[in-house]
Image: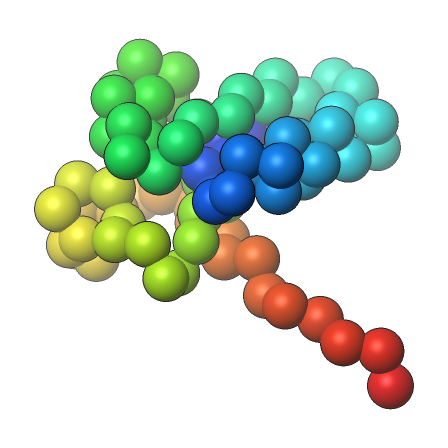
Amino acid sequence: MRVLVSVSPRMYREAIALSIQRHCPTLQVRISPPEVAEEELASFRPHLLIHDDTYPSPRNSSRASLQGWRCSTPTPWTRG
């Protein structure tokens, strides 16, 4: 399974990707800045896309264009 992590800042996407790789070493994980996520979607063809909901979605921010992609948006968590 291929996973593309496209969140900002870079430190966050690296931490998310590293965590995924450590817990699921059989997955192929790639990171990409949100600005070039569209190119990565075309070339890497991920099964799962993890991206910011505050940054415009790949492919001109159109939800319809992401149809067929499994997408996950990291959610801030708090203690308590």
